[in-house]
Length: 227
Image (cartoon, rainbow, N blue to C red):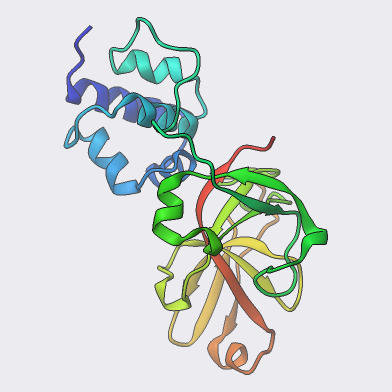
């Protein structure tokens, strides 16, 4: 069955809205860029290849057959489609907690390893990537409790307002928050279905003086389901 780009984009957007996900949330969960997903929905891109369709299905939390059918792929679908033609052989440690600096050698906190997509390795470098087991519900609209957050170590100046970052505040265990940096303050915002999580901010003057000490350990670039 031949499906046009317009038909696929319309049904994809309809499904996303039915699931209650924003484009940015779906893109993050799928491991694709927000502009790309928006272009697909608006038929400014061709229907994605099967491996990308599978990623989008993961982002929408539906079985891949649902998205394949929308794309007109209904016959001879293999049980398991690879994410890429060359399976990734690169793995990084998963930390159960991070409480002091970018964790180089904190072996007692490593609870396992996770394979990551080759494009993340090419973009950031293996040594700049780390897995963090999410513990808590403060970001559950975007990253569910128990998921594995893949963080990339980047310079503070590379953070765009609204990015989700792993942060350590006053020596506590790392937590994920939306980060907003302003000339006079820095703000951290949760993104939870639970109303008890509130945003908080500190003045730039206090932060510069280490009151409290704040360390941004990495930007969220991908997430994977718990295993």
